[in-house]
Length: 137
Length: 137
DNA sequence: GTAACTGCAAAATATTTGCATCCTT
DNA sequence: AAGGATGCAAATATTTTGCAGTTAC
Image 1 (cartoon, rainbow over the protein chains, first blue to last red):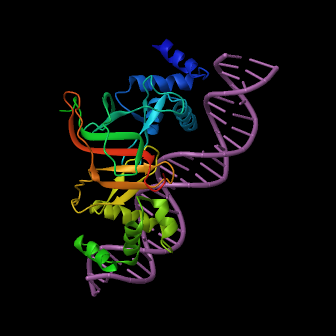
Image 2 (cartoon, rainbow over the protein chains, first blue to last red; image 1 turned 90 degrees about the vertical axis):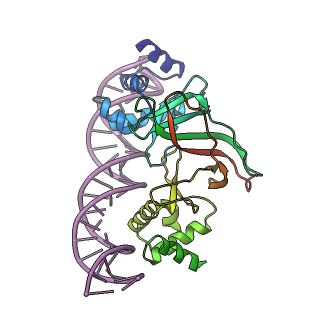
Image 3 (tube, chains in turn red, purple, orange, green; image 1 turned 90 degrees about the horizontal axis):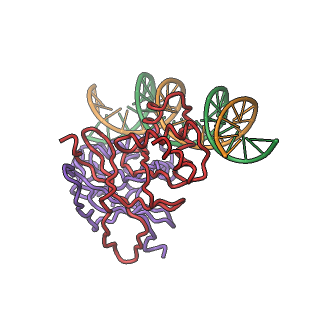
């Protein structure tokens, strides 16, 4: 496990550091998406600034992606293999549980195509479904 | 026009004030959704705090709704009639133009249903499509 | 006249930047 | 050894809160 994290960093030409391993580990263990604040609470002895910079780096490398939310919170989740640098294909649906407030990537549920009005050209779609998750029923 | 704004406020049991009329006017004239910063720029002589409070009030009354975005910006748009207090039915698709960066409500395009994994119960869905809008092609 | 709204000041929170030091390669 | 990553301090930006003065009804 620790080894696969190391691999992921190397594959993205990033040096293997404590902070980065710790944050990636959190993402692997997390039940859903993580906000900056979540990481700050769980990652011990890590500077707030380091978290900001690490998340930014990971996103630029296409290792994580942000999840659109209607409140002003920013959440991140791990990308699947398809994501390349600067080229996100996170075309799966995100689910936010109203009960436990977890944000979950439904990797197997594709965002469906919609018919847009004349003249609109779609490039990428995001979909977030709010409801009750399987564990909270 | 000025009169319909007045009506809208009264219908929601809000007193008719300058700030509120000005902000609603901006929403009616706006090509798409507005962020706090947009309003601050366009509304003259209005305190930042008043804008925060007005937007919050409008949202609570179901007059406007927030639009989920992947970056950390919060944007608002006018709700259609169906929206009731604390009960948003803004089940239309939002479009963000990569060129002019406008956020547009596609009121006529419904968010399609998706088949969720076993155990997940949907309550509300949001969809944001990024691309090029009709005016920027 | 009274309750609600606004502006100002200030607090609380979140994010970004600069720089010296430390760590990875 | 060199370049990148981190921590700390501080600058900026964003949002919230309290309170006194003003306005709508």
